[in-house]
Image 1 (cartoon, one colour):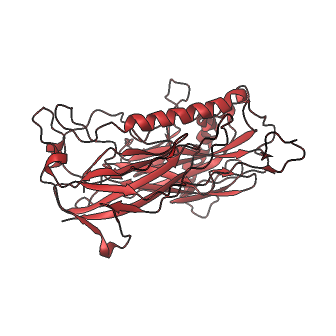
Image 2 (tube, rainbow, N blue to C red):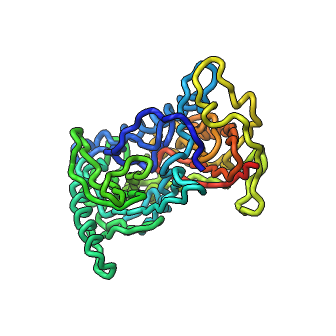
Image 3 (cartoon, rainbow, N blue to C red):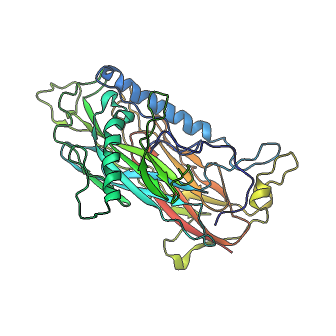
Length: 422
């Protein structure tokens, strides 16, 4: 299913940092900045950090709206970030992005391997999960690395032993797992010793690491020179060679637990009703192609006409390069998102604000022009107009279209549909 195209710009062959599953995946590839919430010495700034992140995420979303995904005119040609041409993790969705002490939280990973195709055969992808790290030093994901590295060594020994009846090693009572879903239990004492921030209640966080691998998982020594160090596991092929980012996606996701607080901040804290903060995943009801809802039934797939400009021509550089938007039949793809998708921002103090919500679009065939759209603004609310333009590939086939809706508080939802190009 992979189209022939010119060589892509050079990428690092070994990822050293994990993907943050609940941050935006655009305008770059899905690798994201680490999310810091302040530690024992920095809790006073945690509230400001969360507000700063929301402002940054909104700016990233807005700045990406004008980024061209298809080369045209004199613009240099690159594969757009929305093109799925390798192993891509779209999101890890937690059923409770904000949880309570003692809650069970289930995670589901959404991914696609765009490197294999019908002519090559699909590559087997294995997803590994590692949980059990809560409130690491500095409240940073890499504060879990020492515990994670020790667990990875034990897990590797368990794999090499070849005895599936042997108990898995655990981290603080939480065992690793393999599969598309993973469930952990938040500890009852996750808020023990946690102090309120300058702008909000005390909070704790539970980290879960995931690894999507087309080979065999194995531990690696820390080779990093930066503050975070090296992700402690890697993916290897049958000859023991370390695989790159087209075949290995490590990452993490984070669940928050907040101390209960009064509904009315002006009320006596001993008299008011106290509740914990919650965050629902943003609603995503389906996808539309040219205004018509796309069916989930493979027998009644939406259809599109091939574009005569092939993938190589679309990446050509020069002012005389052909523009597929002008020369081909273009289609609109729109995520079906209700107007009330955004919840109130609990950190807003001086005025009522909403969480920021945006949508990312991906395709394994064809090209999407403008793969990220802002859906709801903090002050303006629902914006509408979040459809994108899709240009079909030159060859017939089945195109997979994926939409991921995210909010700035760690919520996400994923929907996937198929288009028959004929």
